[in-house]
View (tube, helix red, strand yellow):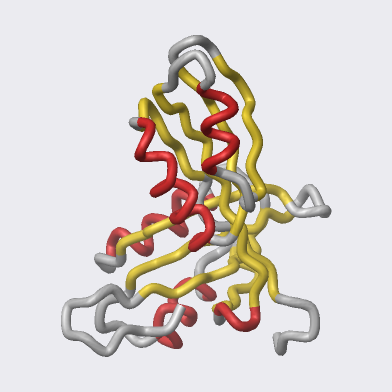
Length: 171
């Protein structure tokens, strides 16, 4: 996430934070952001292959705060094992969208047609609605969601970004 040069524009950064998988750790990390007035744009947390460690993937808006200052603040927290800022060119990012749209009798086929070319599939279809899942980069998910609005979104939920360093990217 490159910082924006416009005054007042979002200054989004993608962070990968490895933490001890213990009660209260997420609260402490999120609390640091809240106390300093940083907006968390996206947040996803799950254990890693080592059950004692979790990875927090987050997109944060830092406003005018320099990224190295934030990294130092987070790294000082108890239970934080490592924090890495991931540049888009050095990361593999994915997001998931679950969406239910209003449809008619041939709804599932129409929705599938609109989502052709995306990593998407129909999960459930009734006479009046269709629920789909879309997986992809944040931009791909944005585009798929825009395509679905023509049907009338009944409900939508995005997972938030998950990301890992790309193979061969500097650590």
